[in-house]
Amino acid sequence: MEESRRDVTNHGSYLTRSGRFLYRHRGILVAFSVACGSALISILVAYLKGAIGPSHITLTRGILNSFFCITIFIYKGSRMRPNSFQEFKYLSLLGFLGATGLWALYYAYQNMPTGDAAAIVYGYIAFTALFGRIFLKEPFGCFEIVLVGFTVGGVVLIMRPPLLFGGTESGQKTHVIPGLAAFTTCVLAALQTVILRALGKQKTDPIKSVLYSALSLTFIAVLSISIEQKWSVPGCTLTRLLAVAIAVISFVMYWGFTYALTVENALFISVITVSEVYLVFFADVLLFGTKVEWLSVAGIMMIVLSSLVTSFRKIYSQRKQKEKPDRQLTLQELECKESDIPMKDDGDNDVNDFNT
Image 1 (tube, rainbow, N blue to C red):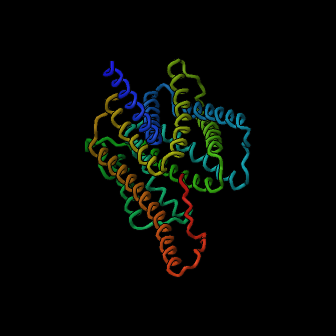
Image 2: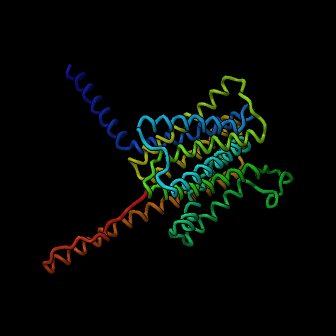
Image 3: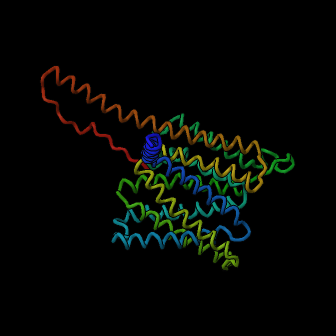
């Protein structure tokens, strides 16, 4: 009897410890779930090639995400209109860039290996530093220049333009047009990150950014379908359900990513979400039978390495910034103790960290 009670007690304590461990690292777990969800969307978009085009997928996503956002605004009783003309400009630009980039990304997913496209897009982390220097006057030195060059080199290896690699005569497949589409998404994602930082300084509600992005996505998708004159509803029920699933998963991912940012450092979250590249790459090989191109693998490794180094460098610089005021405060305390003068409260020691 006693042994069975001990077993039950030990089992209960083990579950308690496991629950505490999972709760303590919930931000990391949610971020990894977001990466899995993003990888699933990539696979579904590639699977729908030929059944439904990128314009119809983006239209479904735009309509449903707009509906979800408006429902949340009505439930919260919040104001959907921008608080200022400057905020309206930022939100409009963010929506246009996001919609264009998403359409280009879906086109890339359906016309080149999804792992290659996902890797190119994650090069935005290195380009964010470049645009941060141009628009926000953030520091940008030789190290950042090398990382951007490294990222561009990885993109070139994945695209393999005929001018450098000889096209099909050398036996290597080229993905120039889809690669350019993915690279366009990469650059636009970096610009969106810079705009989100500017909106964050204005205390803009994140759901407002999603709403304007969804409305822009709907408008651009309608415009694209009208130009192509391909208004139609997919005849297969599974195709329609998968298109809706992509929209729902994308919105759930937004909430998961937002929650992860509230409980974990944003840079750690960005590092974890890079795992999407590996998940998509292995899924592409296993599910679609994509042949492994070693030049593509080298390009993927170059882009991922560049993104990881950029993120870890930001983490290190943030920690140094936080430690510096503490050291200054310690010196000030020592000086005051030696001179027996009350310590003066200096506002210069405050450090304001803004995480996107």
